[in-house]
Image: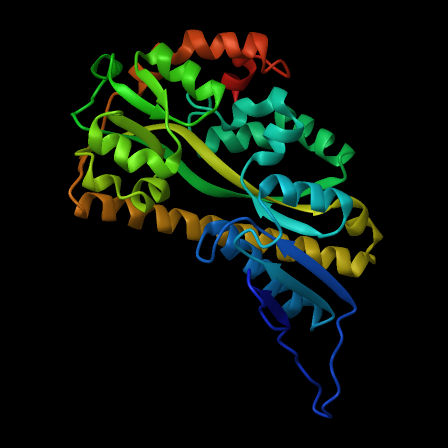
Length: 325
């Protein structure tokens, strides 16, 4: 196996040599970029992909990994894969938002009810529509893996949607978030993530929402008393490759790449689920009280806004069809 792992700043190449001392050159080199740092599920997936490429090809295919935004953010990585300047990338649902906005309900609050619902839609007609558009943009989705559920933090106990009415809640700068949470009854406010801790500390915001990794990274257990398990949105991630590059490989090498991608995304999926459990426990150990709310009350309150979004923006399908999955 041959894996070359490139860090953001001036990493040297790791050279493997034959017993004779001559350098062993790979037949195929695949550059794999991610915007995420070491330890994140997307970084773990990229590294595993590179490792498996070398293993299954006996070193003929080399994976060269760029972590932590060394090749830019997710938008830059998508463009680079489209152009073929890098061959693969692991990321969240940015390709859906960027290239198939009419399907962005797949990554919005109060739509998908959980992982099974999301995957059923992805593996059905809805996913076919997304994949067809991405393929026209020279992108092939090689695998899907879990990122996490988004939950709510607050300075008070919240068990139903009624409890959050009028609460000043920080949301990201995304229209679907603002629209949905306003419908629930929250007094939404957009605060940049670097300012979130201070906003909650000073009362500019009284609640927030996000995945466990975000809640812990920004030390919200120090300024919020309650972790409310609203699970209002599931986030998934994907590995994409350059379609012409993949099609240009021999049948043997293409099969190796597909096998390695399938196993790497499964590995990243398991890693993310294990990490999420540990992060939630750290938040609780850090002083937060876990609350199991009436999730349906939040979803019911958000539905008028969600229906309107399907009518005006998410026009690829209907809410009824999505719910059927």
